[in-house]
Length: 225
Picture 1 (spheres, rainbow, N blue to C red):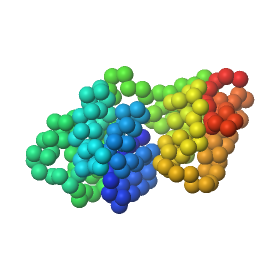
Picture 2 (cartoon, rainbow, N blue to C red; picture 1 turned 60 degrees about the vertical axis):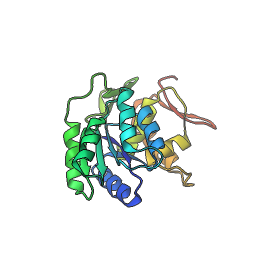
Picture 3 (cartoon, one colour; picture 1 turned 180 degrees about the horizontal axis):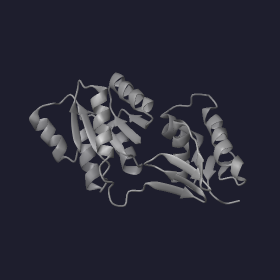
Picture 4 (cartoon, helix red, strand yellow; picture 1 turned 90 degrees about the vertical axis):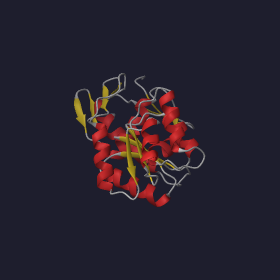
């Protein structure tokens, strides 16, 4: 699953993010409420884990804004505010679950898995398709021409970003932010290396390129020749 973690405590964020990634999930972490709200509004996530006390914009306000905008992404509050009234406020704001710190990661994971088993919201996209390339976001299966394509978690995330933005140019900076959660340039060839690996798996064996380099700009996934 693709999970957004909104948490301003660096240790908690690292603990949650690393644990979820070890379980095979793709995680985006944001430590500011306003930035997190903007990301939750404009990008598609399977689950949002959110602290109530965030700089910039508090967790309750973020969730209320999401629900007012019609965004039904499941939300788990992960917070030190554990009183009965606090829990009620969180659920009334539109939260789907409420877990109090300190917490066991195993319980957080179990709650995330339970939310993921709920029926999908009407109209929620579960499959991406470009030409004969298909990605199932639920089973995390990728096929091209009916043949399975085995991708590592980071390769899957990279391809997902490209497919969600089919026909658009995605810059290297955008990929660093959305796939690796880097908000700076690490001065490595990590993007180029992973693009090359993707091409070797989804382009070269099938005789037609879908991933195109846009010189001086970035990359685009489309079925044009």
